[in-house]
Length: 296
Image (tube, rainbow, N blue to C red; front, side, top):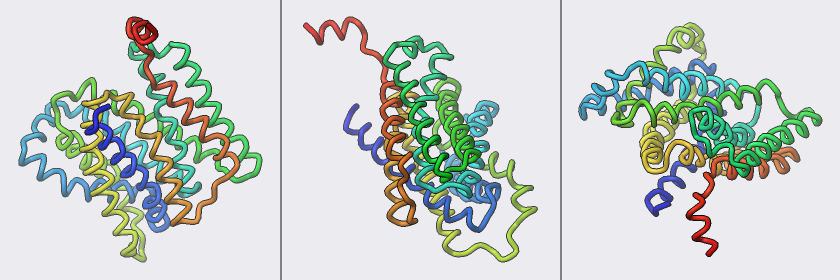
């Protein structure tokens, strides 16, 4: 990986490790549908004018069906489920469970024709990674400190986050980030407009929650997706998804330091296995010729 790629990788890991903390703040005052509606609406106010000015919105509109598919798997489903899950679990655990994204990316890659996914190292990685999730859920479940429904929500979020980059890489080539995400944001906001407005909180939203929403929209959406799409172009969708190795570290550190989250025994035992499994599952095997040369 080049220095530029490494810098973008680390920056994205930090930027996408932060949202769980701010989502936890917002869902204490608004519903999941309201959070998604407001986050996407604020991001659309920034991105649509920029996409219109550089002409990328025109290219995105030509492929609006694939943009809608991308939005469904990246935003409409995952962001609602993520917000709903964080009403029931800590921000640290939510971030940790998303370390499973590379596992699902590898499985999807095999389905789409990546035969290297059946390499023994990658199969071992899948087994170890999902064993780590099972260990995490099992140990903390016995202690009564985990919500199984929220865990299921987060695993569906991970699936969505694995599918969306494949859509972007295969069907939205030539369409800029500004066009894809700029068109996605009003789509998602419109999808949640009716349920969000129908249950608007009577007491209003605090300045703290508004500040969190603004940060989520500008930094964790507009800026983050610009970096993410560049990573996909540079590394491919599977390797770009490896950023989820570091996201949980940021999420856990921020959750413990600022939100008072506790690190459970299940997290200590299961998280390393999830990371190790994801590493081997997403790592493509070396070509035979290169391996032989390296060993000579």
